[in-house]
Length: 263
Image (cartoon, rainbow, N blue to C red; front, side, top):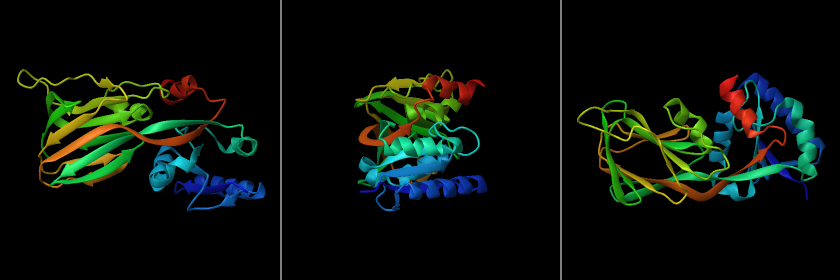
């Protein structure tokens, strides 16, 4: 039985060219293109393309392995370039690839007695750009703090290098199953004293944010939902649902950090 694949592409000429070359190589090596039930999803572009692909196949993650092919600057999720395509395909055929499973962030948003479930690879966030966001924050059922500011973010270890890092959060090595709770422009003065530092949480911890603010938005990776103007509760934890990523044997984690932030 041939292996099935699909390709998710960033909308630019270089990515389209790499995608065509990849598609021809895979078909030449007896792979079958299947957009509905692929075994492998190749993400040609950058990290945004990778996240788009995962959300596209979020109901079928158990059977799919995702492979990032970067076009342009190196991506955090994209271990492979155009020059690696032949070797990569040979390794897949010979079952000589390195894969790792990562738990997603899971959020339950409750409003007016209706609960919706969302998943994210990188992070979930609650933001309000019109008014000060006021939240009661609970950790494992106990009140942690009363928050005021622009928003809050909870990321996985994979998401620690993204938005989380830009607002002062810490980097978490990607083989650690952890969550991180980080504030977005918190109000801190003699009256309001939030926990300024980001908080690292275990895979068994759960955060709950309760509030009631107009113009509040809930984000999960690059996707956003505007919340209704009624009280809300948002619980966040690490999910049992996992995404499988194919990694390069030659691109070590230390090199990724250096390439992304130190060169």
